[in-house]
Length: 143
Image (cartoon, rainbow, N blue to C red; front, side, top):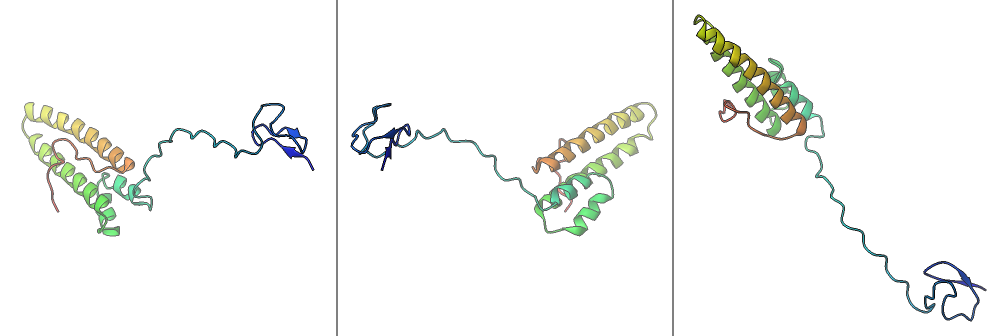
């Protein structure tokens, strides 16, 4: 019956006390392999049950109320629907400035661009599963 070197796997005679290839002693336990550096594992994504999609569509007009009706107990949905409603109130107020000639129309144009940018920011926050307040309107709570 032949024996094999625990370190390199070379076949050795039965009476060998050390490996003829690598010199490892045969009676000793094999040396443990060096531990690899720990690998960073990202935390599990939140809202894997489909609420991210509802959070994302909450920024698209009336669909926010649809998302709220479907799952009104979810904290993420409530947060993003609130952000979307505050954003829509911002647009309504900006629309009132549109009545004022020239300066009001310029202010309305700027506010519309801000509305579009904030909506995109809100959708991206919802997609990433974070509850980050939007600039200007994010600090207000309607419900």
